[in-house]
Length: 520
Image 1 (cartoon, rainbow, N blue to C red):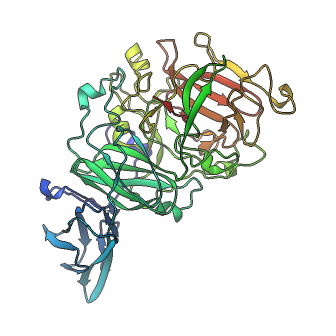
Image 2: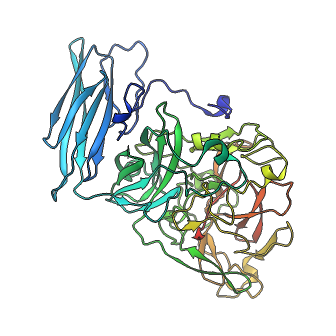
Image 3: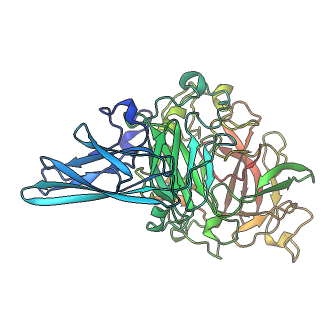
């Protein structure tokens, strides 16, 4: 995979079926089903048949979907149950399922059974077909973004013809080289879905069935579980063109005034972390997602529960990684080194092709996944900035926080604005500090009372033992879009605290942190 150290990170894959393969004409690219990996053993004589999806869901407007079939038998056949759809074979290895508008009030169900026979042994696979009675809710009606908020048990769509919010790219030169429009999308695919507790069974219940790509839109259904997911649009060769974070949360996500350290309204801020299900202390659902600075795609936090004795020593039992992907097809990669590229857009294309790959700096002293150059265009790319960019991970109407929300730095130095328990009164408040005393694996911002959990971070290291998640329940990291004033450095300000101190300081771009989005 171009731009990534394959010896360290990319697993070997045997046979992979993808829908919308090259033999399918453009007319058949209106929809697609979920990708399924098929790994038969070489030389194996046992009969097998596999399908590219075991469930396809249409909204009330209908459409078509291609189901790819793989088998080691000489031939295969299918049987259909249901009269509201049609099925036709395509090019010998695929089925085209088409459906019209469902004008009734009831959900329609059906089934395909694909069978094959080899050496007297018959094997089969079933594909459940569903057409909802309701039309999909357009999540991009108020604007496009890299993240969309949905609820369980719904049918949704979003505009997948433009990258991110269709805005700028800082000074990264990405748009000049790769454009804003998504013109070569062929099919949609679920990369991963996951709950905060890492339950691998319930993680399969966040996205229901396979996403469908049709007419420049991605349509998908949500299941019965809250959580997070990422859906990608791929080209005809199976390369990721762009990907979107789906945040499934039944709570109403609200925003309110954020009062800065000088007592002024600095922003209107979200009531929880980006990707969190709540902001309840000691609940794993409060963590939200992690992000490398300047990247749009999320990484999942630890699935370990919070502990009253906070994790200052990085105890492995408190930092178990959450690698669940549900019914997704992707693979989490944490130990990849970014390519040595000194000219923008540098590693941005690699990050887009590999949204589940954490890109670490290729140099120990540089600490930037994006670019190894040293001129201001490389060190201050503006991937996140004062204006929302196409790489901003927040949902429509929100953006990454700007400068000085949690402290006003002097020059490029960090500031301390919180202390240990001895500095506070019995209510946990101090005249001296902006952050209240540590409580329940987090702290509250004094001027608003907003709670910020200490979810730690993710960063692969094998210095002593292999570690992916770090300081869960023992330290907090929150990104801003505020860059260092030193044009020779690749760093940005972030909130960083533990039970003993709070800092507003600089962090390197290849570090991970959480985000508390603000209104645009």
